[in-house]
Image (cartoon, rainbow, N blue to C red; front, side):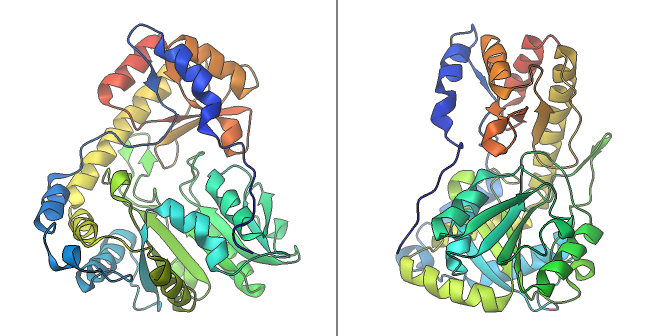
Length: 377
């Protein structure tokens, strides 16, 4: 039958009017809507890309499962940064062309369809729902997937989306919550899909937490087995590689194995030079720390600025967004007000709650200082 139709309020053309208003303000628009990185790609990554531009995996077809060097780099990264030994829990690996295509194709690659249910947070990244709709399966939203009683008895549940730290709320699930989700999902034969793209971006009031958000493949969470679990991750934010389309999945080989076969046939393969760049990015921990400091600094400035304007803004547990309740009770009213100041957030309706706004910190320090000035901070 092919892809099914989908419906979503997630349409960036809907904010074009507010962008035009903000752009007319002296100094131009301060665009805090889309979470697209603006900081430099680390030199180590650029050098690796250049060195491999004429390599074997540039001339010929690279492996769908990733080069041996990339696969080892991913294992090393999981062990050192996430506290996870992929071999010990029996997990396999699969690079993806960015995380968005992995998310949007997930339900289809799991062969879900009519009669199947995919559970997701009510406030969440819109592509979870879009991907489920494309497969023909049904979306069921819950306030908190960690409240397993809210979904475990629903007929037809085949998969559960978890996102920690959350886009847009910044909420982080602890290991106990994740373990409860895993137990409940396994009890009904469902798959847990854990989007962990912001896992290294966790915060305390004093600075970066230094400890990542728990991983679904952590031994305390998965009980030493990757059965029924898929972890998704991206280098877009921590290494500013959104344009490189560099991401990966780790988890149950019985799930990733068939996905690999399909992806090979349709050409969903990361280019050889980008695989080399990923290896460099995974190894360059210092650049990740530098980027983490940038985001914390911008988040702190934005929290203070929004508070000075009257918003009840607080530092998130993780991620690079501020999720705040609108002053007027409706996100579109606040979009109008903020646009008149030259500031463009994204409307909470995109993420499932029209009473909120999402502010991204993927802007330069100069732009963030401009936002603070405009809000009167």
